Length: 266
Length: 334
Image 1: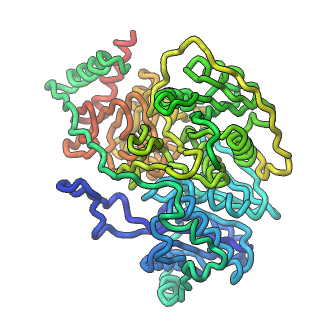
Image 2: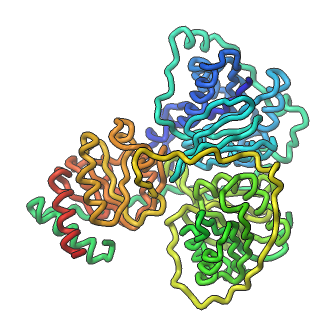
Image 3: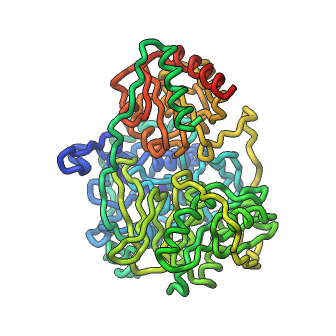
């Protein structure tokens, strides 16, 4: 079995600060991490490999050269090989253009590694939060999908996927398929020292638009993106509301209940 | 594709009993405003099984037309069937705009349809308007965990598509229905549906956690101290008719199941009232509940970031205040 895990290197959004003067995001010095949901996808692949060691896990990221760090982390955790998809021409891609580039990249990597039986992605990236690239990649490939998976198990030539929801469901899906993962009930594994050292030495091939034969330049980057960002702005933060201080816990609770009642909230 | 009409579509998702999910009816409110500005009809599109109740609901909330595909095969959501149906309808009628509730299902099949149509889809919008300069829909959405807002246009391809977060818009007052009802028929070949339901997983508890549909949520965080610390939280929730939520800290500590988690790796919610008890207010948590109409924070640390987003705050011990608040609420509700 061949599993592709798509990962994105993202800024740690918990560390992002707002520049109070310009009202812009301060990204300098913000550490980059493997998108946590992609880490869950990698863990799901690793669990399949635990049961079937002949299984091969390939990690693939699109992004700048620095995204190799995210791929090295994947190699240290569970991936057997990694590929970076990187080109200036990919900059400014929206989800449709990104998924089109990834589709072409999947074809390219498959020409080297063989066909993928499963493609695992995170549910969404924590910077863009769109949750669209996975389903759009599945659409380009013509594969079925299950989104918001918690865990999965290989059964003959299909996957049984536990899907998150108001009611959890187990869904059967034929291979090849694409699954997007959300946070499972268990913690993903950590890398071993030995794997970490090997990952640091690993060669990570880089493919640009020139390497992806047949890619249509009109469908990539800013000009290949149907959506355009008109503007960005920092949301108006509430300036802080009323701190109730009536002198005692009893009085505070009574005042709060009264305020909520007066506002017809309860 | 080219838009054949100026019509604005709202996809109204149905429950398995044939009623409309709230978000679909909510979206008819901004849909009305935008359709009027654009000069097209407001069309509700309903896919489901035995979904006459949803048709009536949409008609009573200002839809000009209701396109309905009612067949037993659509009673249970599958990506393949729903994507095929919506794609077929869009190709047939050529709307200018398609809005979909940003539910788990909406965000699952929406991108497949937009990709098949080779058009733009803006995810999880929280504000909608018309861009005055171009006349396009201006889709506004949060990114970077709610740290940044972006307004997105889809100027060159049609339809313009977006998923819109539940709970952001309010249902309008019911009106006398005037909608033209269009009944469609379309079947997806069984072999084209490549997923199958194997089983529904029975939870350990018989409680169904519907955070996204809740009007009131009472949440506990690290400050509750342990699984038993959720007892007063549950009692307050019971008094308020609320759903119990939690922060990631409480879930990671194993005090409550992940189904209750609000925040970036949990649910995004926008209830009328959100009561945060013993929650410090990490940015990931704020990203998941910052859109609530009214936020109450109860925390013993006066410097907790949760107070910066709270409408009302009480600094103090939650184990003291929450039971008192419960008693006060019960008194008011009589």
